Image (cartoon, rainbow, N blue to C red; front, side, top):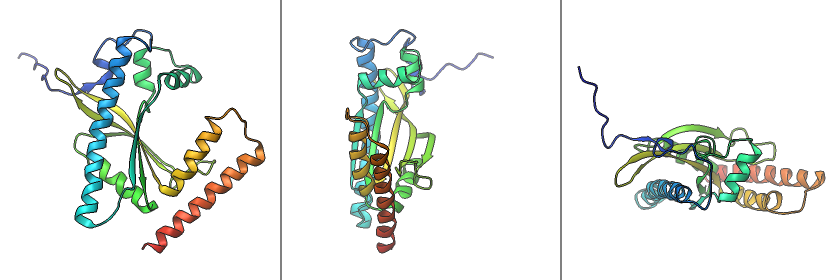
Length: 220
């Protein structure tokens, strides 16, 4: 009995698309091709999520999502993350270990919307959930509260179909306000926060979590 031939349109992992065992060179063609593939994955997923957003507005007169933001991690940020985690600087290790190269942030009005959006994403055809982190039920020590998903998105090119990883973060408008400012101060600034200042940021996050809870109860 002859073995079955592999279907032309069979989905593969992105790490099997080319020979990615070589060292990363951010200026070379391979890196540019990879970033293009990640950008396509974002477009594919963003379109699906935008359709859900519009569906709830038109069919149910409900603003399930306030807005959707996307980004591709910069080459410098990718390299820094790999070096910090002692990951070998090869394309294969980058693809296998850095799950947030492509990122989508979904901002919604109420905390209860987060779980509704998460459930809808889990039901999207072809999208596979690889990992979940529930920082809503169990906020981080910093006070950060959000729901994170690592998913595989099917991407179709002219001669190849593949799965590409995308990170999704779902959080409320209020928590996004806190998180954006905290990230700028903590990670994008040269200033180092004192212990007292760090505690103040945590206190602000706790206040926002209480506010989110109160706003959800008022909207029931």
